[in-house]
Length: 526
Image 1: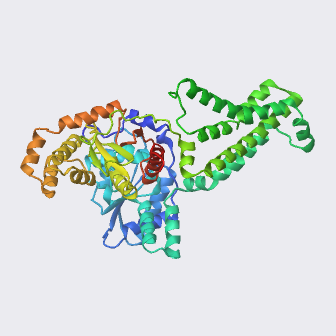
Image 2 (image 1 turned 180 degrees about the vertical axis):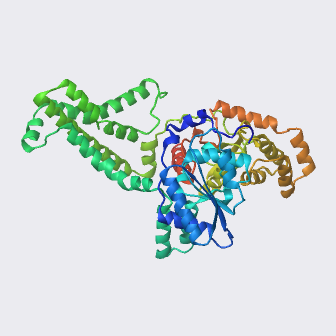
């Protein structure tokens, strides 16, 4: 890291919240015990510890509780250091925290202050994140984003203990280990997140609808309902929502496809269009607002009952349409949901088996293209996910395309050129796996070492690296990435369509299944 390690003000804008004022999450007894367990694990040999914390009450309390518990076990506390969330320099607390070279560091902090301090620690001291354990307040995705993933690589916490408990349960699924794993996973999540998970269904599906219904001021009684269902206002609203909207959606879609000679077609099947039309009849808040502006007195009451009735009917009709689609044979069901229209392709340059690097069967119905950077830590994390994906699906081919982000990853271009030099000797995927498995910035000597480990002709390999022989092929991949709108790594395309969202095994598997179903619709029936 060169220059000032401080996080610039512009870097904080992307978080959409003022992280400088967020309070730390309170610690739990189970969490404190877990951190002590990490430090006292067999062969850890940790005696002296330096404790650092933010200046909010929760962080102070967590640091104090740990210091008391550690000294009670006979451990030594070399220093207790605090730091602000905003300052001109974090050099002084960084030097105080690392003075005396403790065996380990313990951190209780909020995201921004620790991210600032961590950057200074890596820039100016001998601090090692792999010898640091942290309270759950740092289980925040903004920490690696603000501090830089390499800055906090190896940082441990209660989540590591929870993962260990889960692995033990996988190895020996007994009731005792199941309970330990469940408690461990729960303690690794902040109390606020656990409360949100516990109460969210009730608040979203019970409390909020009841509150909305009460706030609408709809009085329900036998006489009121009898009068309303005899009113043309009520019946008109119900017919408009329950019949008019589905008919309008289906008719507009059909006319568009008809008069455009198939050029304008829904990207889904007609069953999905029908279900979309029926659920479109579920109006409530805006409908009540319009009714309030259009009616008053008895007509307004009838209109409100009509809107509520239409809402219930729309949900019931949508359920019925979904149930009918679910009863269809698999091929017809997929056709009804996914349609047969040609998908919009986001990948500007199609896969070329003669040029692209491909893993898996060449004639596979599903193709996963990744634009990646060998120096990108997130590509390294995605690599085992891709391996699992290929193991789970035998009919998927995987394509790697280069996207070296040289402005943020100094070793990116070297990694891409090393893989191309290995490809010239038939060892692209072997070099690909080694490059993504390593940590830290790739150096020239590292690349030569990988070539020797793979048994390549190292003189030829080095000669091609120095002459940048693979630069042209890499530039072609980068050009195709630009044409496809790729700006970061990793970016995935599945059968030509860009994959948005997470790239864990669950999301990628779901996307592959959908692509496989769509591909099956174009195959002739046997």
